[in-house]
Image (cartoon, rainbow, N blue to C red; front, side, top):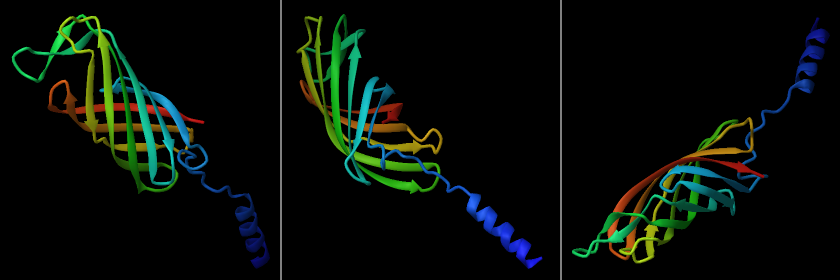
Length: 175
């Protein structure tokens, strides 16, 4: 009987498969996807190490642009503009939940530039400093996905100074 139990235990151990965690950030370092919110557009992320990454995004807008009110230096909504925005952030990423489903949080520093045209009141350029703070969820299956949610305090530097809070959700596919 002891031999039968020993053989059964060895069989279970021999056929057991190891739980496979996500490949995001380990064997798959670069991802591309999309985000909804601010910014809405195409996003990418490149892991530089286990706790560092660079993310970037490109957003296209066709509904309105920001322009300056002649009475102050703050932004006011204007109509008839179209714009493109490019952002890039350096991220510090830390694991909250290791295992098959990985949950990380990140904080970063970066910037954003808007270019627009089509509105005679606009200055055609805006710049901002950003500090994204967010959560990244990487499921075990499929192990090539990363879902994220992010809040980003943003300080507009030009053409006027203003503090804003932006937010986005999205997904990236890693290769």
